Picture 1 (cartoon, rainbow, N blue to C red):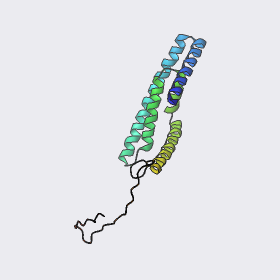
Picture 2 (cartoon, rainbow, N blue to C red):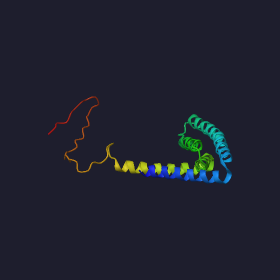
Picture 3 (cartoon, rainbow, N blue to C red):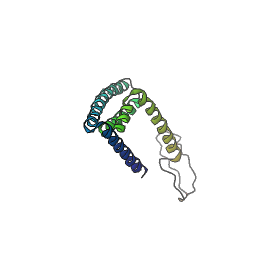
Picture 4 (cartoon, rainbow, N blue to C red):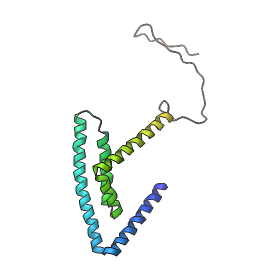
Length: 159
């Protein structure tokens, strides 16, 4: 629900900015700016995407986990989406994501958030299952079976 509110608010703000720019510059100059922004953004996205692909392949070649390269790829894809969506605010946000310094800041923040979520997930889930609330507890004893000789299949007696 919050995502829907955020998206609708973003659309309303984008339309308001487009209307204000169109009122100030006129329709054709506004259209020209939108098209120019899309073209420039697409060219930058292409260049940065190729650069990220080269870095990704280099990471794989050197047997290093390509975490940063994958994050860059995700951010470049998001930038491409924002640039393709018509509007000035989305274009500015998309261009912001295309520049390597800002991408680095955002990818580090994404990594920290992923680490926090991973820790919370690991702490909240034991033995591959989420903890159950109010479940049945079955008492039992652990019998450690270690055969004296390899290859024997001694089984414990169940009581």
